[in-house]
Image (cartoon, rainbow, N blue to C red; front, side, top):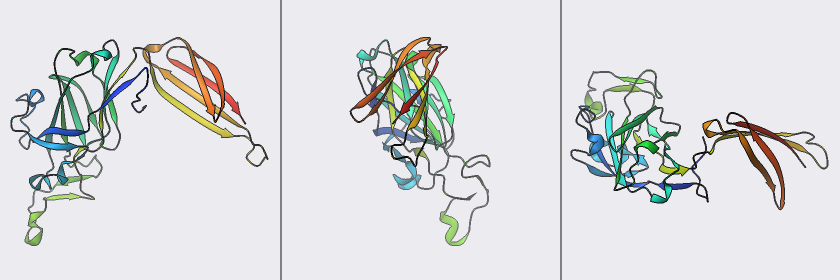
Length: 248
């Protein structure tokens, strides 16, 4: 997964900052349509854990909602628009303008959703992300709600069993970014040093590139080494191309 770039072909908006936020311990938000607007929001910082920002959320484990409103630049029209969430611990559902655009489980890796068809170009756009950090045996950390309230000095702690506390929230930056209709989606680079003990060692760079929409046609690979550059033509077939370059 490529990190969002800002250049003459791609654009990005960093949505880090203050979002609207609400706990949903009774899990009524989806039924009541909180993805269009929260019932009783407060302001929360993103990226950050909700457990670190409010006294009443310190030990909270359950469903929450994040909401942000923004304008998408009109210059992005004609491109594909993606939403990248760097980390949502532990599971997330995403809506754009009331339209469910995808879900993800696993708080330790980023995920990207194509939201092009949900974006509106006239007026504000509403992004809603439901995040929950429930304890389950199949998650990291593995755990469960015991149902037995601790006694003594422990009665201020959650009635749970787990290895480490499952901090919840949007833990990494959220980006909205644009790419051309035909674009690179993945790059894999493998390097090999052929004679590492030689006075002037040489090596091999193998590059595999994946393009969107099964692109077939030409591309270009440039390996830059200081002021020296090597350029190789890429021949894409069904969205894939490979190249090998010898370097010294």
